[in-house]
Image 1: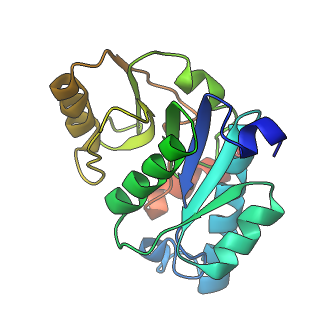
Image 2: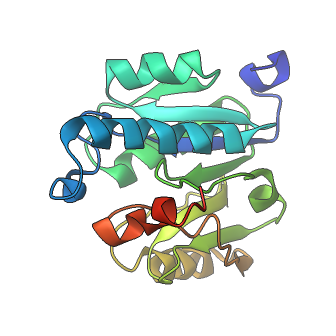
Image 3: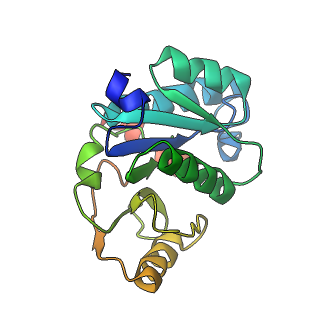
Length: 197
């Protein structure tokens, strides 16, 4: 990480929430054994950290192994104690705001095709990159000072749009084939079978 990014002088940073690699992707247990799920989770999170460049990447986690992994990849670590994705992202955005960042791009750690995230932050309001089903929010860009209330979970893309409207912020919904592909179910693993990764 360069000095400008680490001291908060950069305008935008990328937040990547990452669960413990050992417990990640439990819904794939019938398809992949524990070791394969751990390897997959690390591989996907690594792709997202790399896609954050040239922006500063911050991994928000509550797992020491994930924190050490993030630091080894050149990312910062935001340690969070509160349970739940929404609480973790809220804490991370507040941390970045206090450090002088004006914009946060939140990108899930299970986007195997992620290759570039910087463009998501080039819009002045809120950018929503939905999953390929149009339901979830794979990537989200918000001003750190907006007081944005996160609503990850089923229907989050619509909820985040409604929140932007509540705050009176301009909205951009950007469908992106690469960022729209996340891995939650066995069917999602087709991306690897098709050689698209």
